Image (cartoon, rainbow, N blue to C red; front, side, top):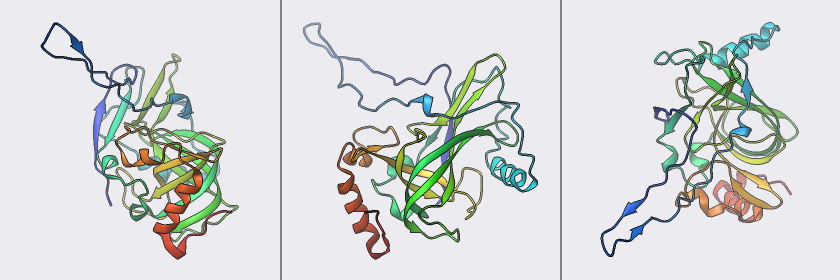
Length: 255
């Protein structure tokens, strides 16, 4: 499964556009129903400084270099004071089901213990990495050993870069939010990345749900017509029961 992306450059802040349509008849102006997509909370986007360096430990340095190289983008300039807000359009997002088990190499429940942003190797892009403390592994078709009590790093394109002037450069994928530290999530993970071949080494967040106070809240900010909206504010038990039915005997849901 290789996701297709189209680059979209947005000048200024990322805003939801409202359209007003005028209809003839008695001089009245009629507006369409209000767009119901929730706004992205950029405060959840981790921040990196452009001067951030690789770790001094050689092993950690090699891992970071390999991860950062995946996000290199030769078609755009290095992030600078002249850079504008940048978003990618994920054309595959609209075709995802509410529970994309078939497109996920790993499905797990865990708590976000930490979040950091990193620049690509060539400093043309920014990505975020989240340390997930695993509570339950529901599916794992990779060679990685994943189990409750362990931690795993997962990635998502985007983040914020604090430039020397204090300006915050923001990058992300349209409709995709970032998980928040301290939050508990059901995550669907893939090993596919924008410019990289499939690998069991790294995990990318395909989509997810926050599990909070027994209720479900989609991570991504799609419209109310998207399949994931069916679980919005539903009971966590409903979501997990449906997921268990899809996974069958392989599922080991937390009690």
